[in-house]
Image (tube, rainbow, N blue to C red; front, side):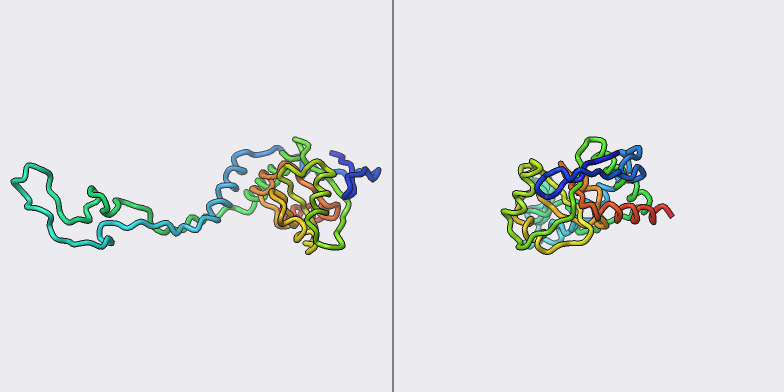
Length: 212
């Protein structure tokens, strides 16, 4: 697939780049995408949820009424889960949601997500650029040049640029990532992916190494 290269003003520079088919044109695997998204989101969970059970409640342990002869059900102390303010039965406890995934599976998930973006024509290639000063207005104008000011965008760079990072952080849905840090969730969330020219060889080297 050939894509036109633009500058940060959205102007055609008169040259094209060819996307690596082993990265941007594979047969997407929906199941591994689901697995990787599940893995990423599970690993982000704190797992600190906790409710008090009967033995952890504060309150008297005195038996409320006699066992028999009242015509009603038996009742123990005030912490009975059946009573308002009582403990909870089988409530959530702190736990670790992390689970591991095979590296090749995660790799296939990322490549599948990138292939979907290429198939849907949601990839833009721009010539590397930087700003003289970290101004949010400047980055907003850059997005506006590509009609992305109201869409979720992901700029993929080779190395982080401080001025770009500072200029973009106050813009909702605008994100900047290094090519080596790409993950399936951020790829899928982006309505448009903008690649620096220098980030494409990084991806090729990264996934070429992954194959070995």
